[in-house]
Length: 228
Image (cartoon, rainbow, N blue to C red; front, side, top):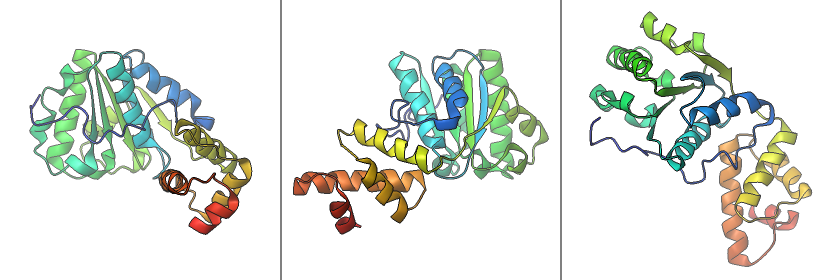
C-alpha cells in the first residue's frame, strides 16, 4: 500500500457506534460491528439518503477495528477521487476497507476498474470491504458491469432515515455522550425549527454545547430560542 495514503483519512473522533442511534437499522449496525472484527460477511453494500449517517457508520467501523488491533482504512471518494487509482494497490492486506460515496466514481473507467480489481484481491485475501452510497445499487450508474455485480456480493442494506421520535432519541444520545442534558421539550423545540438532516442537527448541538459552556447556562427553550 502506498505510504502516502493515511489509514485514518477523514475520521472523526465522535464517529463511534456508541453514539449512533440505530432505530430500525439494528441488523445493519450488527453486521457492521461484526465486520469491524473482520468476522461474518466480508462484503457489505448499504445506501441511504444524505445525512442518514453512512459516513458515521463507516468511520465507526474503522475506530472499532483499530481498538481491536486490526488495520482499517476509510476512503471517502469525495476527497480521494482526484488521486491516482494506484492508491488502492495493496489495500487488500488490511483487515477492513471502507469506501464512502461510491456513486461519485460512476463513469470513471480507471476508478471502476481499480475498485473491481480491489474486490477480487480482497476476496482472495479474506479481508472485509464495506461500501456506502447515496443511491440504490441499481441507480449508481456504474458502467463496468462486472463491478456492478461485485457491489452486490455479500449483504445489501438500506440505511433508513429516522422519524422524529428516533431523531429525538439520537440527539439525546449524542448530548449524553458530550456530557449534556437535553430535556424532551428542548428536543421537540429544536426539531420543529431545524433541519431534519442529522449532520445539521448534530452540528447545531455542538454549537449549543459550546455556547452553553461560555454562558454557563443549561439548555432550555429560552436559551435555544435566543441562539436560533
